[in-house]
Structure formats: C-alpha cells, structure tokens
Length: 102
Image 1: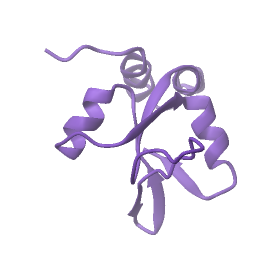
Image 2: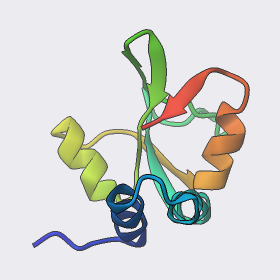
Image 3: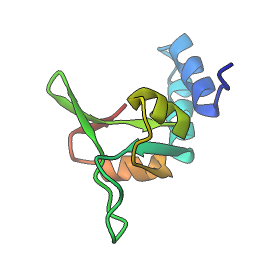
Image 4: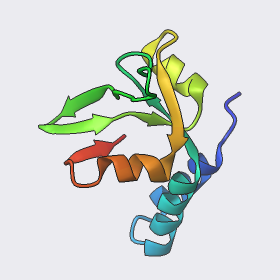
C-alpha cells in the first residue's frame, strides 16, 4: 500500500481542477515547504556541494525531486546518491537557469 504524502494530496487537488489558481498555488506552497530528495550524479563533495542528475526532455533539462527517498530508489532501481533539501531551496538553485523540476 502506498502512503499518500501531503505533496500527493496537493497535486491531486490541483490536477482535479486545473483552472483553480488557489489549488495550484497550494500545491507549489506545499512543495516549497516540503523536504525533497534530489537524484545526484555522485555523492556530495567535501564542501557539501551537490551535482544533481539532469535529464533532457524535449530540449528542456529537468532535475528530479522526489517526496520520499524510497520513491527515488524505486525510480532508479537501486540505491543512489541523493541530497535532501527543501523545495524552496531547489527553486532557488534553479532560478534563472532554464532547468525545470520534475
């Protein structure tokens, strides 16, 4: 049985009513407040620098962020290096770089 997270619930509400700006903003607020797990190319460096794995989809780069570490491991099919940060930190990292969060 899959446990629904707060991000899952907010995303479901947004998807159920795509024209509802309030539901959309509530989803992004929940994402910003939540801890997410980023798939990394390798373990963090000595100075805690991270190098997220990026994926190209239709000429757009995406960083993968998961709301649970086990979902990240299930996606890659093995244990993988990751960093746990807030969604807000991810948004700040990506600002102005033309990289999306998936």
